[in-house]
Image 1: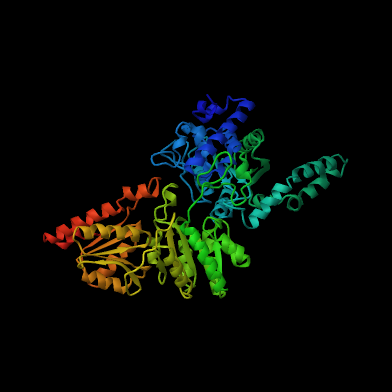
Image 2: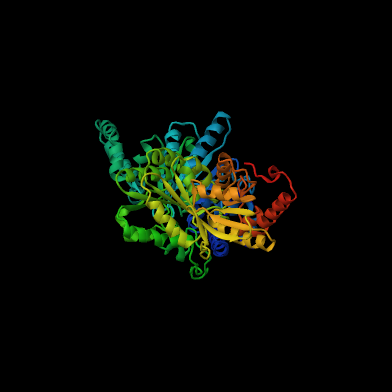
Length: 634
């Protein structure tokens, strides 16, 4: 029986010897590697925080002391030592352990965060609450250096600095990376701290020697002490934090558990806000990960444990975008690329290789990315901002007020839109088509296949007086679906039989809609399937098609509330088209993690479930029931 199997709570760690703790760290790394090799997940970040996490749990008393991870994908080790080792093999599987902290799993998890740069704000509020309530509790926030590139983290630090009684320890897990090497001035400053951690020793030496001089020594030291900030900036610019009034400890080797415990205990005794600067290496202890230049196995696909070789991957939507944006870059010298610490994940790395001077990684700062893009557009360029769909939520105000209000030609490309699955509620890109509907002038496209992605991207970057959005899902694109006709700017994909049912299918759901049509035709029901291509604004031609049919059905991989179907229904009502309407989308709730196909089946977005519902609606209409009985309300 291994040591890990005997760890049922963090308190079990405190009786272990140094040798046992070293053995435990080795066992944990082995479990991490073997589990992620088959289940996928975030490997590199967790390999880098093994000793760090053990030290935190030995010094602090979780769950009384609260531990908040930013982002939550570095919490696997935390899960293993808080009673979940026996079920860790179910990581990211439906009904199993989440890839992020989960309140439903454990009292040791309080924040289910997976959008970066938020932990310090959570921790600020928690620590203040415990102070007001008179509770003897500490809060520990573990934040990666990449997350410190987000403005929200600095907003939090600005407030934490004046909360002198907050018992808050902020552990900066500094591995020089978010997904890829951390970008920006902060990264440069932290690098200086890593390479010049000697200023305290210099100050101590000066103090000892001056104070030994009779008479003038102490006075001379006081004068020099007033110059301490300048000396710090010269030797180690940790003034970055101390200028805010925050106590700073470090840098310390985050893989030296004993050293980490010592500085954490020191920070705990301070009883005020303290920053502990831990230096770690992403992928530490697993040679293939440490040697992986792109992202240190940040989130690899299935791989061979012995060699680290990833299993071959098929072509995905991201690859198509990557090729298309390079093509456009050659054609259009004014096109520039922007991303928020996700150069490889969103496929902009190829564009960067061709046009390094026209590519900008702003760090984990989606708000800045959007407004900087507005400035680039004002300066005569056409920015393409590539993000995951779930992360555009963070820049909504900037899209609305900074880009759209100023009629800036900026294209937002949203990867992993719709249901993404394994990463859970926070990563499903199911909000964009709802929140963007309210933005005046914005145009939104949802390509159904690889060919349409290229076409719509061309059309999007041609718009120079309004924001445009092109969104596509996770995974491989389907086989191309050629149109059989055209209605305005929309493609007609199926036109069979009488005008019974009009199916308006958005983006990734068009393949499903075509399968639905086959089932309906087999039941003797006439079907027209239309792909709007541009779903915002609503194409007038679709309004006329709806007027001609007996039932309108919309299908989208976005939340039902305020999405494409809801706006289409509103548009039809305004145009005096009262054809019965059925809306199909994602229920407006947070979805538990599972494979995309399993989630789609769970929420009824499969060809069989959709076809069955449409047949029932048509039967009701044929029986003379009032149209209101089958009309979808939103």
